[in-house]
Length: 329
Image (tube, rainbow, N blue to C red):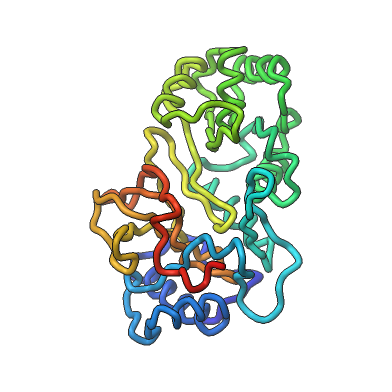
């Protein structure tokens, strides 16, 4: 298969066999064209020609994005996304050869789960992210806001009174509305201006960023559900190192779009994949990462369900990182 970087053929419904075939072809393409990925595979003494199933594909440890340019080819793209972090923390950097591919991924991913973005008004409560010029989340939300074409869509920062008034106004107009916020800001809003908006889709994107005490997702969502009178809290599973997102419509159960897949690896043997309902490390196949690496071993712990959906159960600590010590410097 020829991989057209400007217009990849991935973003559509596909059978399991076609997905697996595409993943294996993409693996060989990236092994040949991505120097860091090739080094990682060679360091681990893996013969790429013996990789015949997606379960045998080597997954690149996500932390390598912190100190290597993970790209296909010799040219490093000028566009990149950078992870958030506290001062002095080494951040991941994901070089992106085509922002259009990223836009295709998140627009079609949103449509796959929620329908036409133009049907919505999108209100964003992401105060700390807006200061980050290279945030993939801000890039995505900004473009989704533009695509709604709704005059009230936008970023609301810390003006909770204005945001609450707008939420009530949209409720009275029966306007389909999304409130997308970082955890600590949604908690602040819930405490200061609780308002019953049962039909609003509330996305909690995670992170206290040192502003508040960390809490369990179940506790956080319980507080938000009670404050806003909604049946569930939605979420998206994404990161700087991925150009696609999985979505949850409640209960912490995430589903992937057709060009993305999650596998669970054994925490003691990163090359071994686990069966469903077993807790291990989350591996992600993301076809949208065409020009970087589509096979990422995250630092998240999770569990896969029979239908392909998954849960995120926690994080590894640094002592659990295995399989890439030769390349982390």
